[in-house]
Image 1 (cartoon, rainbow, N blue to C red):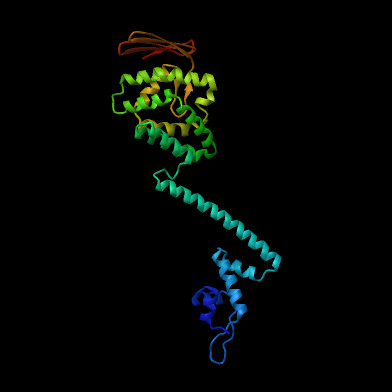
Image 2 (image 1 turned 60 degrees about the horizontal axis):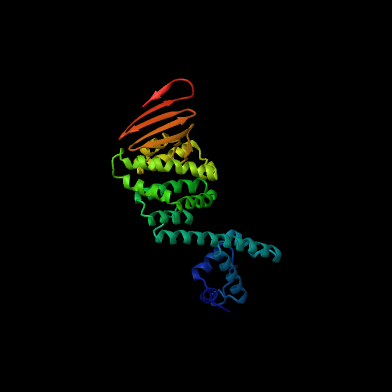
Length: 299
């Protein structure tokens, strides 16, 4: 026969735990012997081990009591359910470990691995960190909104980034961050970016340029995040609108097409279909717009 201390030691618990299980009615409390001590046998050790194992698996004590009284079939089914739940918890904890590992490596805890790789790619191309941060903030929102779409979007972004013209776009934009908004590099960038976007859309379809299909309030939020971080982008959008494209988070064609003619330092942009004409001479520009067949607006 065993004392309560021996029982606790053999079952791998504390004396306090044995007394707690007695109080909860999980482990029957034996009568005291003639010396006033409670004595336990091998069956008590086995029962206590079962209680400890179920409790450590996260089974509530009320449920432990039910399982101890269940028949073999019911007990086996309950154990199978506990095993399934533990496997789910292990998978979830493994995902948490992977996120913590990315955080320790300097990646954003809230970003999928594909986005982290994309941002690292931008850094490797020496894109200004402020632009990388603007991209990061936008992708945090996108990944939270549509996580299932991120792999598709990332594949497309990496394909676009493989084109030297897109790399040049990021590099020139980086160079304009600390310059005035009338920096001629922005005009150069718009002149190069507009036909590039047109070629992408013509070769691969409009969805290759933009397939996010976000709600307007979310698009506005993401535009604000980006444009507040990268002020020259506002000027670039205005220049692109003169060349047939508009938007930042959602890039779209404007109503009409554009033809660009250059002679020396001047350029003329003619639009059809809800048209605009832009005449450039030196550093100045005059833009004339019309909306359909009625009225006009000059800037």
